[in-house]
Length: 577
Image (cartoon, helix red, strand yellow):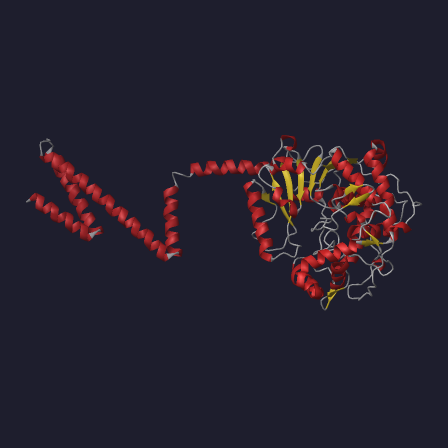
C-alpha cells in the first residue's frame, strides 16, 4: 500500500523500446507512428513516485524530450500526501542538504516505521510547506509549478490537509506504530508468532529469493519483519514514528482517529530501488551471502537518480561510499521511542523552490476517477499513451478501461511475483491478466509463452496494425473457404498418422459415407431404367451406350467393393433374364 512491488522503470524508455521509435532531435520518432505533441502517462496505484523519479532523472539522456503529462491515481488522500512528500525530497533544492543526506532521508521516510529525529523534523516542516501549497495556488506555482491539483475534489484536499497537520509534532497527535506493527504480525502469523524467525526465513529463502529478490539479505529482512525498520545504518538510530504510514485519518476535535498501520508486512520496501543496479559487482555473493545488502543497492541507485536530477549529467559512483554489509552481522540494539513534545516549533523551513523539470506536469487525480476509467467514461477515451496499473488494482480492469488508451499505447501491469503468495496463485493471476489483455486487442511486447521467465511487469501494447491485422485475417478466412477441402484432407491424414486410433475412426466414417453415396447412385440409375421400360421411347444406341456405361460402373464397383459389386451384378442378371 505504501510502496510498489516492482522495480522503478523509465516509462518513456519503455515506450520507445516497445514501438522501436528512434531518438531524434526535434521529435520522438520517425514515421507516421511516432507520437506527436505530449505524452500522457497514467500511474494507477503506484503507491510511491519511483516511476516518476526515474523517468524524470533519465530524461536528459534523450535527444527527443516530448512534453509529459503524468496522471497519478491512488486510493486515499494519505497516500497522495506521502507521494507528494517523497517527490518533494527527490526534487529538493541542492542548497538544502547534500546528496548523501538526501538519499538517506528518502530511505528513512520511504521504508522505515521509525525514523531518525532529523527525518522526523523534516517531515513536519515539509508538511507545513505542502499544506500551504495545497491551500494557496500562488504558493504552489512559486514552489512547484510542475504539480497540478485540479483533479482533486475538495474532499481529497481536506484529506491532504488532515495528513499534513497530523505530521506536526503535537502531543495529541499520537501514532504508536510499534504497537500497530506487532498487532499486525500476531494476527498474520497466529500460533507461529513464537517461532516467527523461522517463518521470516522461509518467506525469504523459499519464496522471495526464488522470485528475483536475491539481493535481500536475511538479517535486514528479518529485522524489518520484526519491527518495520528496513534501511539501517550503524551511525543512525531510528526512534521517531513515521506518521506518513497513517491511513484513514478522521478529525476528532484536535486529535485524529486513524486505522493504525495497514500496509505491507510481508515483502518490504526493497523492491523499488534495491533489487538491481548497473554495477554488477554489487550483485556478487559468496557461500550464499551477498556482498551488499538491498539497503546498499537502494542507496547507490538513489544517489544516481538524485545526482542526475540535480546536474543533468551521468553519475559516476564512488565505490568507497558503498559499505559491504551483506555478510556482516550488525548489532541491532533495542529501539527507543521519544515523547512527541521534545520537538519544538523552532524547526528549519524547507520552502525553497523545487528543482525545475521543463515540460513535465504531474496531475493528481481523485480516487473516484478509477470508477470512471473502469466504466469507460467518454472524458478519458483515447487519452493515455502509457498506463501502469498495480497488481492490487487489477479488479478494476475491464474491456472498457482500455478505451482510455490511444491507438498506439503501452500498458504495464504489475504482477504478484514479489509477494509471498503461492506459486499457483501467481501463475493464475498472470494467466487471467493475459486473457483479459488478449481479449482487449493488446499484443505482448515479448513472447511470454516462449520465454519461461519471471516477470515483475507484464508489458503489452496497443497498435493500429493490430486492428488492421484482425480485418485481414477475416478476409483470408473467407477467401480460403473454397480451398478448405484439400486442407481438410491433409489434416485428416496428419491426424490419422498422429493419432492412429482416431484416424481409423475417421476413415471408417468416410467409407460409410462413400457406400451411402454409391447406393444412392445405383438407385437413381435403376429408377431411370424402369421409367424407360414403361413407355419412354429411347434411342437404341443411347440404351446400348448407357448399358455399356452401367456395365463399366459395375465392373469398377466390383473391383473397388467386391461384395457389393457381386450383389449388383446378380441383380442385373436377374433383370436381364
